[in-house]
Each structure stands twice: as structure tokens, then as C-alpha cells.
Amino acid sequence: MKYLEIKGRIEGEYAEFFDRAEIYSLSLGMDSETHDEMMMDLADTVLTAQKKGRPLGEITGSSEEEFFRSYFSGFDWRDRVKAMLKNFFPVLCVMLVLEIIAVIIASRAKDFDFMLMTYRIDAGGYLVGIFAGLFVVGAVDAFVRNAIIKGKKVKFWVYALIMLAVIVATGVAAALIKPISVPALPVMIIEALLIAAYIVMRVVEKKKNSSDTIDLKKLEREFKRENREKTTVFELCRQYEKECEKKIKKGKKTRTPQEFTDDIERLGMIGLIGDIIVGTFMVGTIVGMIIPTAMESSIGDALLMGLITLVITVPFVLLFTWPFVQASAMQRSIAKKCRKLGVDIVEYKRMLEEQEKTAAQCD
Image (cartoon, rainbow, N blue to C red; front, side, top):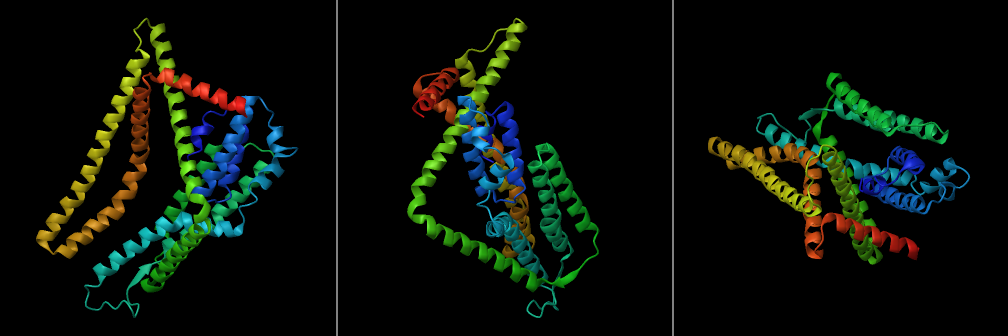
């Protein structure tokens, strides 16, 4: 959710309105790319209105309900199908890979016959997941949208908690349901067809937009990075100001802005070292599992073990470490710009504020 960098600068009634819009958009089941794009545009509009002191009515018109329906009206049922494929594409890939690995392991049995579908898997978890995704989540989203339209306050943490409860309940139900044995081949064919459908859809989309989106995407990436950097600079300066206030109250010596900037660069380098250590540990873990297996069994078994470890560990490692990787990279980038301009981060913040004022006057 890259628009969160701008959202952090929205305050008061503008923030309350944006929270309602955010929950409404999440309840539509958009893919992350479309959702981020629409919310980024709205965040820019709301932040501009806040800076210029324009009332929310200029954005929403006479009815907030009509605004939401109109603003998100371009996302229809066809887009929902596409979004579903986009959101589940990584999951489908992992499932198919795991099932292929399971088939390779099972193929060593003498009575194995894949084409005659004697190899079977438990489809209970799939059925529970499909039911939860299509019906339960759909019902919750419809209820949330209706509540927002009627003017009721729906907190983001409440919505997130409900969805978390659905996920937990789905996992428990999948674990408790009686095994439903089905041939593996049809399941794998369906997964492969869905993956192929997604790839074809992406290729068609890229061909349609290839003529005019290359430069736009480059500009969009640059714009998003600039906003992310600007928000980070403002947040770091707020932290510095709070730190100085606390130390002054206690009669302690404060860091100079330049010392604070140097410390940011130092933290960025420490983060880089940490990233390298985590990456080295992952590679070492996989190699450490491959070598003993290769010595005891065969190269094929060893590579299979490495692939299983990779599929299982990489998504979890990226989930927990990627935000820190991005944060340390941003710290290094900001420190590098400050050094290049010959300023500390507080002076750099003032320069960014002046640029904002100039841009606002031009508008």
C-alpha cells in the first residue's frame, strides 16, 4: 500500500474521510495494483484540499455515498475476476509447485500411476478456502460497504480484525474437516489453467498499453519514490524534534542535525549488513540441507529438498524482512542526497517544504 506514505500526512476530517474511502475500496476486492493506484490519486486530491483549506464538499459533492460509488464505479465484475486471478496467482503457483514435488516423491512407489489418477490428494482445505473467499468474505465486504454508505463509522482495525478472524476460522475449518480424497491430476490441471489464464491476461494487457504506458510508468515510479522519500524525511525530522524536546526537558545535550543525519546513514548501512547476513543465512540453510541429502541419497533428491525449502521459507522471510530492507535503503538514499547537497536532514526538509509551497502557488 504505497499510498500510505501520503495518507500519513492527511489530518482531521480529511483523514476520517480517507479512512472511510480506504475501507470501502478494500471491500471491493481490488487487486493491490489497481487499489494502490486509485487510493494514491485520491490521497493526492485530499492532501491538496487539506493544504489549501478547501472543504470536503468540493471533493465529495452533495453525497459521500454517490462519490464512493462514482469514484470506484470503473471497477466492475470483470475487473473483480481479473483481481481474483492476480491476488491468487502467487498462491496457485506455490500450490502447483508443492503438488508437483509431492507427485515426484510419490512416483517412487511401485503402484504409482499418475495418468490413471490413482494418486490422490485431500481437497477439503481447497473447498473450505474457496467457500470462505467467495461467500464469507463477500458477505462481510457487502456488509461493510452498506454500513459506510449509511454513514456508520467503520474502523479500519475492526475490518482488519474481522478479516483476520475469517482467515483463522478458515484455517481451523480446513484442519478439522474430514479428508475429501480426489485425484491429483484434475486439481493440478485446473491450477495450471488458472495460471495460464492469468499469464495470457497480463500479456494482452501489456500489448494494449505498451505504446503509451512505458514512459508513464517510469514517471509514476519516480513520483511514488519522491513522495515516499519526502514522507520519510518529514517523519525522521518529527522524531528528531521530539527527541530534542525530551532531552532539553531533562537538561541533556541534544544531537546536532548533522549528527542525526550521520546516524541515519549509519543505521542504513547497518540495515544493509543485516540484509546481507539474512540472505547469506538463507543460502547457507538451503546449501546445508542439500549437501547431506546429496551425500546420503542422490543429486536429484538434494535439489528437490532445496526446492522445497526455498518454496516454504522465501515467502515468509520476505514477508517479515522486506519492510526493513526498504527502510534501510531509503535511509541510505536520504543520507546520500543530503551529502550531495551539502545539507543536513533538517535543512533538506526545509528545501522540500519550499518546493511544495512553490508547486502549490503554481497550481
